[in-house]
Length: 317
Image 1 (cartoon, one colour):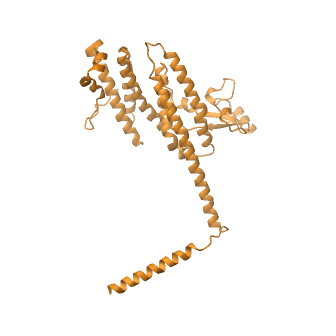
Image 2 (cartoon, one colour):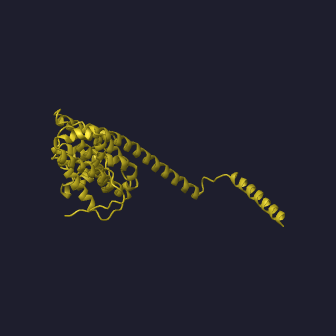
Image 3 (cartoon, one colour):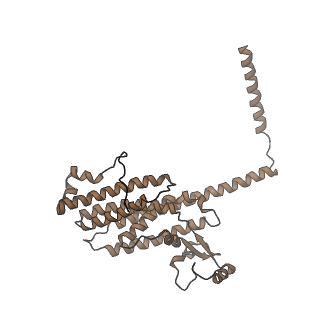
């Protein structure tokens, strides 16, 4: 009985393999509407994947340049009196990113659903927000609102020209040129002429918030560097800003991103390190800088790592 069943299964397998080879030799009718429909779907998907990869490459360039700008801002030293020089160079390089990189992403997103491609450039956008806000913080400026940066990522250009040099940010236009605050009549006249178009690189609010979370790490490094350079009074200013930033993050109740919890943990670690610096400045006074750079056992406390079981004491308004 078992042999019979085995022969039966073997016979069925041979037949199925033979039928499969017969189907492989059947010619595909290209005139079939179903085949033509699937060919069209394949073309659309290939174009979407190619667009996605192009945006990823641009995002990598933005990430690299943003990291270089952050390293540049860390070279600010009051003893060298190079604040103005470094800030001007960082400003020029940030404007170059607006002008040469984000405009290309905006062109790729033209007539597309931008939310389908946000994951392609989210890493570059977060790194750029970190560099841009760190530039503003280092230069003593107020941190820009999300809407202000989104306006800088809105471009206008001639419809007949596709080169990046012809596209410019609407936020950088002279005051006498049309902006979003124009009357409805002038807006309609611009739409009917067809001479200009609007290109938008979407700044997702989540990317903006996560970029601010990364800013805490750079401020923590600035706080420690200020201690090493002898400017211990600025350590308290940096720490106070991080406390306000941490309080704002704690006020967020509805968390819809799993990356947000990681940013919160990183922000808290950076805050604890900055508070530890300020504590040692208060206790040791002028010897804190020397103690933090020479004593390895005590200097390791700057790298304080909170435990996962350590509950947050919360924040009080």
